[in-house]
Length: 412
Image (cartoon, rainbow, N blue to C red; front, side, top):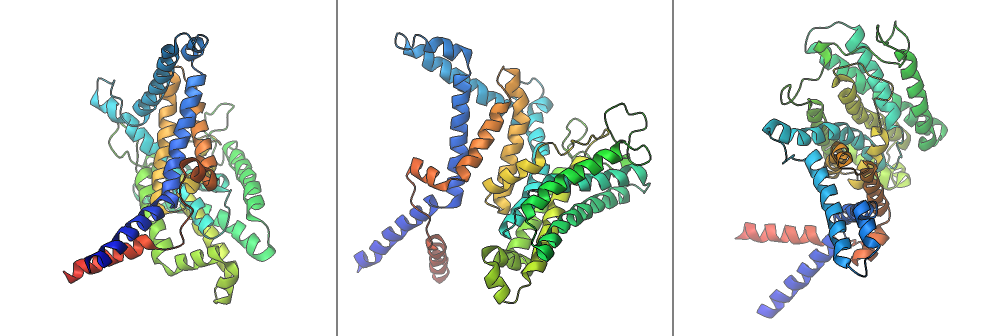
């Protein structure tokens, strides 16, 4: 009798472990590990001490191994000091500044990553986060520099206008796809160029956004103090409330996708548009709404960039955020917790790159690591082959196992 009870428990435990190892979270974590391994190889083979010691490797292999280890340790310790905690600093404020910089860089990455992730869940490829960010930043800058409003109201109005502008700009893509069948990838890429051109024109026109005493480089006036995002930890850190907006966006994204009727429609259309249409869902309207909501999340990044600055902005305020957001969404598996963690990781890369450059390493190494992470994320069979992971499981063993434990606990 006891053996009959114990045997299924052992088998179920093995099934749970197998399902965990075959899950997307495990593959994402291992992809990050592989990315860091590739980055370590680049550090080693670009290190002069290692290359010199490698010439007499057969005679004294320990020298090459020591040089390789030193290169990796110095590189990743510099990344840690530049992104998490500077243990070499004399001042506690300076020591924790890297962490605040990581959070500051992560804010717009998380917000825009949520927008891209939402589009992915609906079966759309929003490659236009860059243009949507620029368009939202354009109107946030206009409100913050050309409109006078009381303190508090000015910031809220500028932020709402930015979010609505980004949402409207993205909704155009959804409208064209729904009404004409235009492919969203082509349309969003072209609209990136349109937004960049419009922003540059505004920044070159004194009556619109150009800085009055600006030089040859197109530049806007600084946002009014009443419309600036306040610092989160005081003037000694540049981290502002834009990061809090990104965290609010994470919870909003989770609620929309996992708890709302609209999110259910999004997911249903993403799984199978034909089945969703048969079930009575207006797929074309869903595309339009999804692109608008996707753009609204990107608008949070626009608020971060436009209203978090203390000086005038240039047309390249988006940097690489629009395209990094695609990587963040992929690494985060288009889930709210995943996008949050992926945004923090890539924010750490951005914050730590200058510290790596200080010790003589190329800051592009972090870009190499990011690129290989995406490569491994996009090739699950490769990751499974390297680590000999089991194939994806269609069962819900973990959920059933947890449900059985809860049930037993309730009975006790």
